[in-house]
Amino acid sequence: DTGVSQDPRHKITKRGQNVTFRCDPISEHNRLYWYRQTLGQGPEFLTYFQNEAQLEKSRLLSDRFSAERPKGSFSTLEIQRTEQGDSAMYLCASSSLVAGNTGELFFGEGSRLTVL
Amino acid sequence: GQQLNQSPQSMFIQEGEDVSMNCTSSSIFNTWLWYKQEPGEGPVLLIALYKAGELTSNGRLTAQFGITRKDSFLNISASIPSDVGIYFCAGRYIPIQGAQKLVFGQGTRLTINP
Image (cartoon, rainbow over all chains, first blue to last red; front, side, top):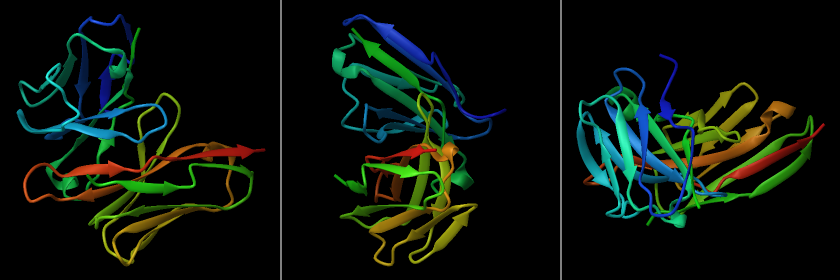
């Protein structure tokens, strides 16, 4: 296992369409995070899973966004009825319970969304 | 909410020069981290700081956790072309309820002229 894997790396869609991103964390990492990064800004926290439980969601995560981690391994982030303001890089990160205590998040390469 | 102010926003330097950037916060953090991000990639952790006053090095990189726990700096010595990228500071806090999460600065874009 070489790290956090995200798919697709790039997605171009028309406004109003639904999109789904997948994240495969580092094996045995029980904590998984989704962040969003817009151009020229640092990443912003969206949501967090410990195993399969979604423990926290940011105010940034509107009702059109839903994230799941059904078996406590990979996670999906779905955006329904996309809007142009959803265009951003969606970053996934994972950490282990031990590493989580030190704040060491390992990020994937991101999924860049462009909404036309 | 918590915010981090990172400066400078961008730097244009000659190869071989030293670089210094810093991050300040209105809130206290118990961990400071520095990440580097290259175009089209996710952030990569460079240095983590866990104690106020801590000074940590990673090769040509040196970072310090401020005594007040509200600031941190990163220095890069003898810059080389592969240092090009965007450097982000991040503070970690543990809320009374909810997930531990990182708050990021706006980034410092480093450009190096050979």
